[in-house]
Image (cartoon, rainbow, N blue to C red; front, top):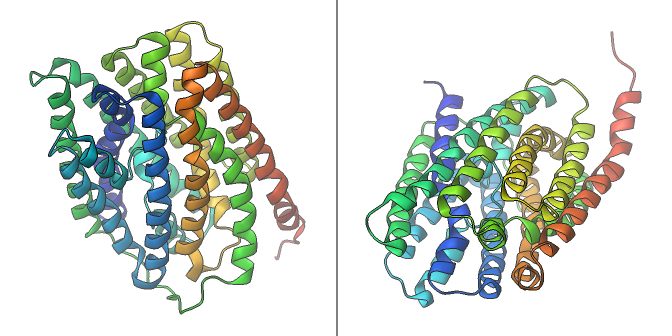
Length: 393
């Protein structure tokens, strides 16, 4: 099996575990007796922690290699999950949940991304379209495997250990999958490139990244309001069981996988596709907010997954266009940190959820839509210059 296939296997194993933890965290904390407000604050801590963790690993990857940062990105949450299942005491459970760094947005290809992945793809493959194809395959396989996280949650209703212990058993399975993912990364090859010195980032890279950050911040705030507590939203709004919620997120993962596969077959303008799909993601959230029936809301989320799957590989390619090679790790981590920090709006999601079931998705959807518009507005100038550049013969 070649190096890229080992990376695919790693992301597949990681996705099963990480998607289960991501979609079950709010349900588990609710089972322990925490209110939506407190759960929202816990997610705020999660997003804040992983923002710092991601930046640290990205900067470290520029210096020691992105492969090593990927391994650390799997091992740390795997160990934290062991602590999470060791007790029911919230004093230990809450910090452990925060350190897992997994309880973020329950996107269909959530398990594909960890610090160093985008940088590794950018270093190993130079052309935009090749990067889109590689990321498309990674997100497609990851999203397909992520359906296993939804299936694991559905198994919860059939386990014999009791409600809380059923969750703890499945968390143990997730931890084992993350350890296995780290072992697969050992077989991945990384092309040698220029290693970073003491400086933080080149001026050109920083200028380009600042534009990405501006749009990611707005879009991320919307995602933070709408998505982290979405499993709990389905439970409170429609009284959906873990079985049904798991089925919805399984469907979303499968549709995201299909969307990412489709992205590898599309040779259109990457920036336009990335912007349009982000705008549409926001529109789907608004439609879910006003949906009167669970089947309709669930179907809209599944369709949103397909749309997100088309957009993710294209955004990955666009996000590194103006970045120097030795800045790939720091740049991708900075972009992720901006998104993560803005997703600390999840701290307000619980408050909004107690006021109105529609508010988190309505406000979040509007913010993500505006973020997609801003993404195109800030980056179109570079795109236009690229299109105007005369071709050599």
